[in-house]
Image (cartoon, rainbow over the protein chains, first blue to last red):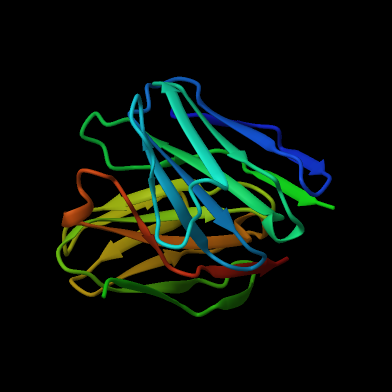
Length: 116
Length: 113
């Protein structure tokens, strides 16, 4: 149990385009989902927390207009990188928490974004 | 300020050579401490949750213990397939509602046959 999927696993795009990444909890309902960014050989940097049906809470320094997050259902959250630039190239990982009194976050496999 | 520090940054072991990884934390009230394993190019995989000092959890060759200031993750007789980056994360009580975690920088373990 506690499986989280992400799609796509890899994406290459041109500078200025927008990219959408999907995060799904496959076998549980995720009241809260988290989006992280990870640089090579670095730890996870939390970008934002999203709760189903409400606006995401962004961490300090993360541009909410740049990284649009939607948590439309209890099993799906999306991250849209708008007008992507090469500095947005990174490994993006989502996680989900069931909210049934359990604290564990279960992570997706990650999405490697490369902006040319 | 809440902080998590893992040591060593990297560890090389021979197959069968037991060792420990350390996770030191400073947090204003600990709700839980979590250990994850991350393979290159993949998302972290959940291993253990520890909630109170003195608690221990085991999974195959891995055992995690918790004190008031740190957690140790012992690995007994490691195998090459245990090679990965191990991440420690804490959740302060003040983050109980949000579920936010504070991650350490990780320890990269390499086990040679």
